[in-house]
Image 1 (tube, one colour):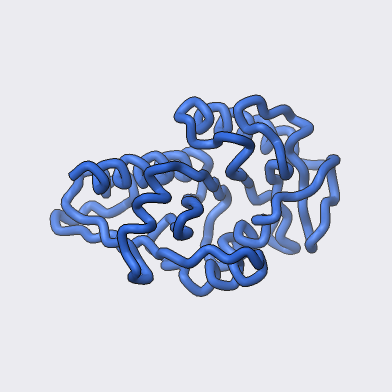
Image 2 (image 1 turned 90 degrees about the vertical axis):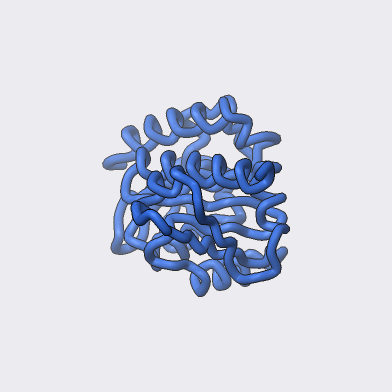
Length: 196
């Protein structure tokens, strides 16, 4: 399939980097790249894959609610990736579960987590001196269709992330490099908020 080899290599490299941070423990998290818009086609890590030891055959291609290339089952959270691709003009979505993002999500009952007063906001594209990032926070749902719908409704165009309470963070961008930068910036900011 056209573009799959390059997508595999990009996802393997990103997974290794995030696993080195300890952000993809116990097979958690999932990473995807958009291959086509119409119909929406994505390369995504398969369910149950150990991202610290990810291999090319751990990445499958999904389109129209089914696997069209590769073996294995798509992540149950693929619908959230789909919602993000449909609502935001992005090409890479990375999802991690960390202690910091779980604790940060529990710090507020509001529909967003306000972050201000830190230089790292620039890594998210907020360059104003008095910048405030309002990161959407949604409740975790065991029904993944409800989770995807809640994600779709909560996304904010200028904020490259979505936090699921007591679950994890989705960060995204137009490139793999952007998505990694956004993810690392958010995780830095969560740690800063928790220790400030």
